[in-house]
Every structure is written in structure tokens, then in C-alpha cells.
Length: 79
Image (cartoon, rainbow, N blue to C red; front, side, top):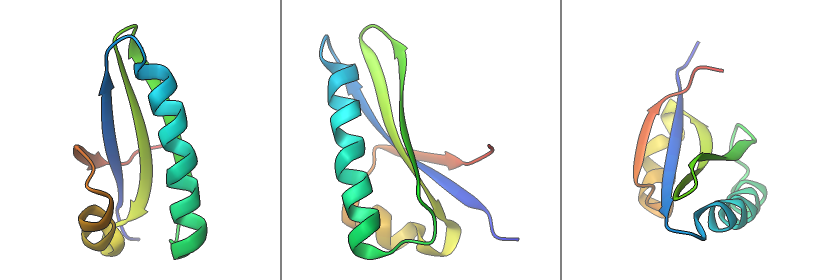
């Protein structure tokens, strides 16, 4: 079983949550166009000034997706 990688984009400031929500729209468009193996995206408010948007990819896709979308960081995905 291949590992799954959670690619993360950080957004900070008073509009962070709305920006993260909007970023997920673009991540879903990318998934539809590129046909990635997984369709797991989302956003989360960490506090009122920091939110994240994320996308989960198979480990073998990580390099190409990372180079194209340039996330701020990544971690092993555990549902």
C-alpha cells in the first residue's frame, strides 16, 4: 500500500479562511483536469488568522504535483 501525502497551503491574515476555501476550488479543478489518483481536498481554520487548504496525493504523484502547484509544506496523510 502506497503512502499518501497531504500537500498544504498556508493562508494568514483576516481573510485566511475565505482564501483557503477559494483555493480548494482550484485544487478540485486541477484534480479534474489532471486526473490524479485521489480526490481528497479540504480546508481548515487553525485560528482566526491562519487557515490551510490541502490536497492528498499518492506518493508517486507527489513530485510532479508539488512542482506544479508549489505547496508550502507537506506531511504523511493519516485519515
